[in-house]
Amino acid sequence: MIKIDVDLVSKLINSQFPEWSNLEIKPVKKSGNDNKTFHLGNSMSVRLPSDEAYVPQVEKEQKWLPILAKHLSTPISEHLAKGEPSEDYPHPWSVNKWLDGETLTLENIDDSNQFANDLGKFLVELQSIDASEGPLAGEHNFYRGGDIVVYDDECRDAINNNVNTFNKHLLKEIWELALTSKWAGEPVWVHGDIAPGNILIENGKLCAVIDFGILGVGDPSCDAAMAWTFFDDSSRKTFKNALNFDAETWNRARGWALWKALITYNYNKQSNKAVADEQCNIIEVIINDYETER
Image (cartoon, rainbow, N blue to C red; front, side, top):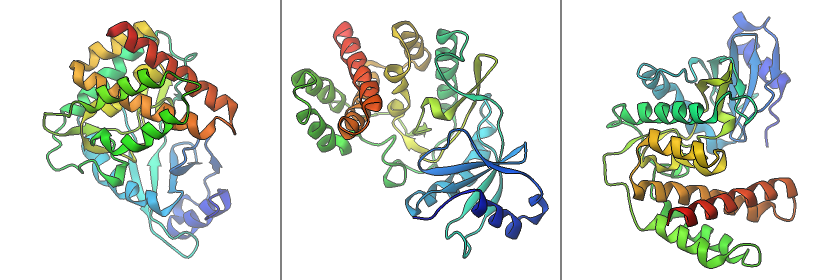
């Protein structure tokens, strides 16, 4: 495992972009798992894949984000320069424009319904952009936008491993409902990881969406999982209305949320109580919402 820290980033900047060598480098407050991100001065960021598996994300973002940005009213990550592999670091990497804003929390939005509507409109805009030449969902983006059935075994294992915690039959019912339909339209753009860590808030409102590493084209249902992982009953309805999903697409979206919550709970239940409790709460939200709708 390569140690990605300030010293490494400093070496890379000094050797490849000496014009920026006088700028301060420091880690961001919250960095993802796939890529490690650092401040470069006040107006730029450096983004490095944490493993070879995430390298394709760099070139994908560099190719597609400038195209997508032209059609979106909400700012997204903006690529400035590409770093090349070297003796110090064997993968390509990126320098991006720094986007102001705080990572989304329940506390830093003024109105959850307004935010739900704004996020839904952003996704509708993204889905409306021509995707005919975009990268089809697959291994490169962990099948976000693809057929959720690829995670069938994993989800069923997580259900069976936790029969003493959750209602096995009800979880299977929710999951199998998600598997009964497929996206029948033309493939559309999907962000792939619409989650609080990739959403920025300023003055209580949505101001930017970042981290398009698992961008792809396909079924948009995967981008709606926040309906159950973040929103309450009221804002969930607002989000659903903004997206204008039909019932089958909404069922698949619920399936994506259930799969992720179950596998995360299953992995952390003995080692990280805080994470396990959070996922347990999400699963309960999914169950309650499903029982209300049916």
